[in-house]
Structures are given as structure tokens and as C-alpha cells.
Length: 319
Image 1 (cartoon, rainbow, N blue to C red):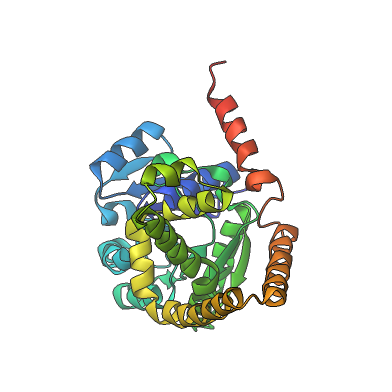
Image 2: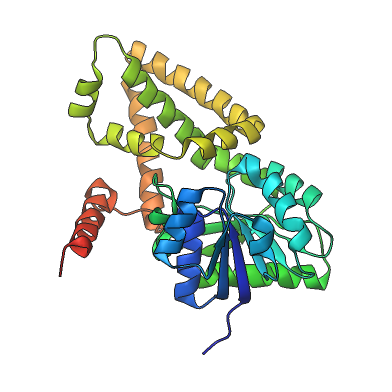
């Protein structure tokens, strides 16, 4: 049997992503011991009941003691505090990474809080659902998904070895791994993730506030497109508040471009410019097909969710 990549992994904050990392790492044999720290008594109770951690504590330093890999899975604006909490307990040569959706501010916070003797490798698994909490975790979450690592500007051999081992870790969990500059990461994710979430939150809020349309009608007559917006808008409010506040420059830049494009679309509708509408819709349709061809989404009706739901229901039925 192959030895685990990390003898001990500590996970600080155990919601959907933290729990999924543990389950996937266990399934892949990528870690030995797993220690979890979470501030919520309710979460700690559920983690203990689910049984996927060897130890559960409220103290991040206790969990991080003697850990080879420390994974920070807390909201972006809490990363600095979490890093300061584990810093005194880190052993020399430990790797510290995170799962935050913003890398610029997180990289600065980790570099400021952590000692020189550890290897700081910020990371972002581009995977998730609208669910949250330790019960939401599942081992397959990272299969065929991208994980972006934004290493520090270090060229020494020990640090490079730490980056390579972390890359192996995510690969073992089924992910594709790419290295990227943190500023470029934040701009790319502002386009592909942050702005779509902002639009979803806004359009669902607008629908709820429309005069002459009741919330009951919104729920009763929701078509597939609106239902998908509501799924995104059900994502964790704390996490996404932090994302927008810490990546505001990139988000505002992309939002400005989006606003200009939306105004142009509005003019095309107003003036009956059907050819412009058709050209845009044709171009975006090809992008959708490219995403499916790249294996990042399913071509099944309702994006395959009906199939997954039926399988999950079957799995929960008494045998």
C-alpha cells in the first residue's frame, strides 16, 4: 500500500469544502491522521457523529500541532485570524494552504501571519454546491474539477517540493491542478464565479421585490433558468459577502464591463435589432457547448441534476 502524502492533515473550518477534502483524501489514501478544528459547537458535534476525523476541537492550534498539511477552510475574511491561530503550533516544514475563492488578500494575510519555517501555498478548488456544513461534504466533489494554486515567488528546492506534493495531493483527489499568479486568478474568478453569483443574488432579490408579482407566484411559475439562479443565490451568505469585499477591485472592473454590455443589449431590444441578439445568443451557445466538451458540466436535461437526485434518493431508501 502506498504511503500517504501527508501523515497528518489538519482542517480548520469544516463545512462543505473542508468535509469533502477529508472524505476525498481518506478515499484516496492521501492522508493518515485527520484533525479538525471548528468554532461552531453544532458543527463539532456533527463532525464527531459523522466519524470522518480522528480528533475534533475548537482550538486551531491543537488541531495543527504536528500536522504536515494545514488546510484553512474558513471564510476569506477569517483567513488571517485562522492563520494567526495555527502559527504557534506549526512544525517546521509544514505546508499551509487554503480553499478561498480570493487569492490576493488571502496570500497577503497568510504571509503576514505564518512563520518562515512553513511552506505557504494558497489554493482554490473550483468546486462546490449551494449546500453548507459538514453534512454537505462528499468525496467526489473534486473529481475532474480544477484546483488553482498560487505559490509564492520562491525558487528554493524545499518550497518547490512542497508545491509538488500539494499538487500530487489534489491530483489524488481527482482534480486537475494549475499554477497561476494570484492577481490573474482573482480577475479570472471575478468573471467565471464572482460576477455570476452577484447577478444571481440580484435577480432573485429583484424578483422577490417586484410589485405586482407575489413571492408565491415567483416560486410557482419558476422556469428552469430562474431555478438555476435561485440555486446559486442559495450559496453561503458569509462566504460570498467576504468574496465580494476582498476581491472588490476585480469584481468592480468586470461588473463595469458587464454593465456596458447589458446597456448595449437593452438598446438592441429597444430598437428591434434582432441580428445583434441572434449573434450574441449564438456565440454564448458555443461557449456553453465548449464547457460541456471540456467535461466541466453535463449535457443531460436540467444539467444532470434530475439523474443525480434520483440516485441520491435511491441511496437513502431502506434496503
